[in-house]
Amino acid sequence: MKRLMDIVGAGLGLVLLAPLLLVIALLILVRMGRPVFFTQVRPGQDARPFRMVKFRTMTDARGSDGAPLADADRLTGLGRFMRSTSIDELPELWNVLKGEMSLVGPRPLLMDYVSLYSPEQARRMEVRPGVTGWAQVNGRNALSWDEKFALDIWYVDNRSLLLDVKILFMTVRKVVGRSGISAEGEATMSRFEGSER
Image (tube, rainbow, N blue to C red; front, side, top):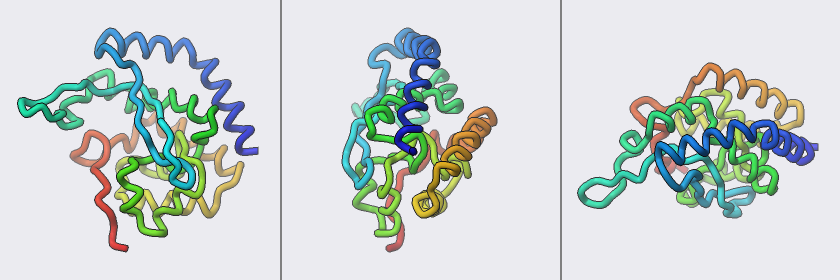
């Protein structure tokens, strides 16, 4: 039933949101140029890598040393708006249709983090990663890494179709309220450096 909900939800979402997706793509093209999409390899279920797709929110600006500037310096006004409304995440519906992601599940983080997880933290990868999840509706990037992982594991242990529906409704409320967009002093969230094992 969960996979069926994913297919129907992602398919309907892509069709109904097509005009909005087109407008956002054109705005990115005009204001930031190509590419319109940001793609990155992320760990999926059982740490299997897949290429996640999002709308691009940052420029490629680099310092005098040739290194990319900090996220806060590369994040554009349009990018901030997209992140605060989660519009940048909408292309992930394509990943859901392909079966790489689910509408609801722990967010797919960076491949670099996989080797840093404790055995308990690694349990977040027992299920497909989600466009939204229990951690997102309970604090998002305002949470510490330990809090976020604890919520992810709670979801893995308590997941159900009813809980997924609840999380989807809570997501809409969180997006409208634009809360928990970033950690204090960060453009999004500080890097995960590992926890005590």
